[in-house]
Image 1 (tube, rainbow, N blue to C red):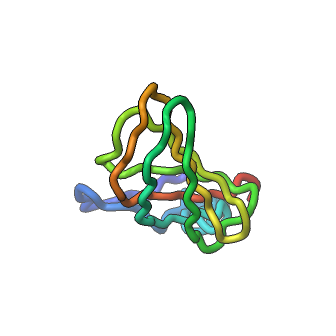
Image 2 (image 1 turned 135 degrees about the vertical axis):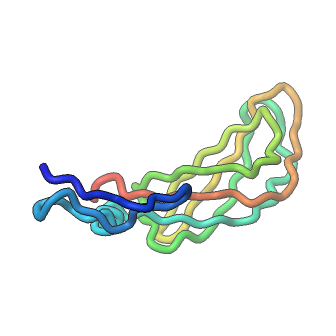
Length: 122
């Protein structure tokens, strides 16, 4: 196996074009194969009642297909006691569920949620 040498590597640099040898797959080819999409959206969840009650919000993620894997990142100001999950409900549409696992109601502020969608079986 032949290794490429990276010179003048600076903090924060990212390799976007690399192959180990002629038979390897380039990073950009892998990204296209696994269909990684990302977006963010501002959501105002409103009041969420206690004990596993949840609210849903739909956002557009171009290229998302039913069956894709969805990762949800809440805003840094999100209150504790909430859980987040997402799924593709229809082409290009991701539903975000925000559940309350506490004994009291929670009303989170509006915030920007990060969403990542990946193809499970490319």
